[in-house]
Image (cartoon, rainbow, N blue to C red; front, side):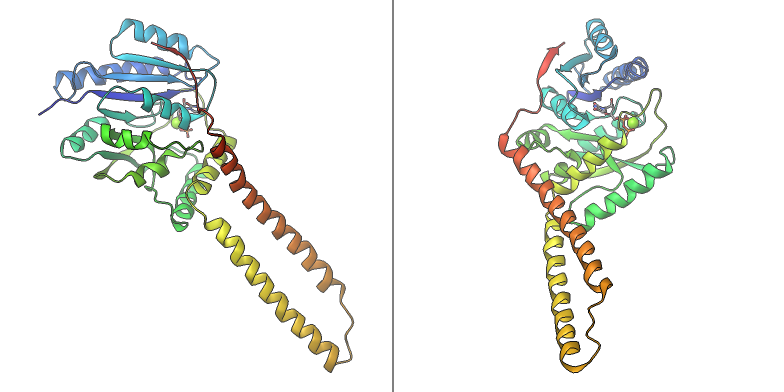
Amino acid sequence: MNKPNLTVVIPCFNEEEVLPETHNRMSRFIQDLIDKRKISPDSQMLLVDDGSSDATWQLIKAYSESSVHVGGLKLSRNRGHQVALLAGLHAAKGNVVVSIDADLQDDIGVIETMLDRYHEGFEVVYGVRDDRTSDSVFKRTTAEYYYKILSAMGVEIVFNHADYRLLSRRAMDALKSHEEVNLFLRGIVPTLGFKSCQVTYERTERFAGESKYPLRKMLALAIDGITSFSAVPLRFIAGFGVLVFLVSLLISCWAIWVRLFSDDAVPGWASSVLPMYMLGGIQLLSVGVVGEYVAKIYAETKRRPKYFIEEKT
Ligand code: UDP
Ligand code: MG
């Protein structure tokens, strides 16, 4: 059996509170896998500092100086989880890459199962949470509906899978050839193809510190997920426009009928003012949705680089 060189990519944004424990556990885990001859001795964890303002980078630097199994990458500023993750994937040297969050919410032991799957010939292995009780009720329910809406819109998505996954070198190179600026990795990976499977695990509480995904970032990611993969909202608007037009035709017929065949042709206040507000609202919303896509196109056509690397260890 050929021992693969494993790189574990870990994006870190202001994670000084969890990083010591993460580094500890991951070091022990990697050493253990090396001892078991499951991975090659030059395997590494690659800690990507996503422009933290705390001591995260100092920690990463110290770790990588003291161990050959730790590599560090510092982005020039905060670019968000997806971009930090991509930067790590681009820099990863291994022929197998696992991406995982820094906060130890995802059971790192599962990586061993992922590797076993890899040896069975799977090139993409998704980590899937089978228990989300550690997340808040709000996060759980919104996430659930979000996954449902996404798949209803035709976006291929793995239910309850975030960014904990194993990729083979081939899958990673395929991922690298995507140049889009609006990144939603968990939407792109299923479109790569290759043999894939899932492994389940229990998601626990964050080990320390606070979530680095405030509602604002979560919403931005959610909108990216829909608008980068589905044109259904645009079609929905067009369909709705047709419907409103048909209804207005019917109302016109009715108005003509009232005018010609009855005496009570007093134009009501409600029937003229209410549709005005309603249509105004619908139009604004529709223009907003179209605008969201235009903004995406705008960002994509500029082809701006997604990140800059400030330091590497
Ligand atoms: N993260 C990042 N950049 C950001 C926000 C988050 O690199 O702008 C990292 C963070 O350090 C963590 C991972 O993304 O390793 C997931 O974040 P978090 O655990 O806070 O999200 P949650 O689990 O609450 O959704
Ligand atoms: Mg987390």
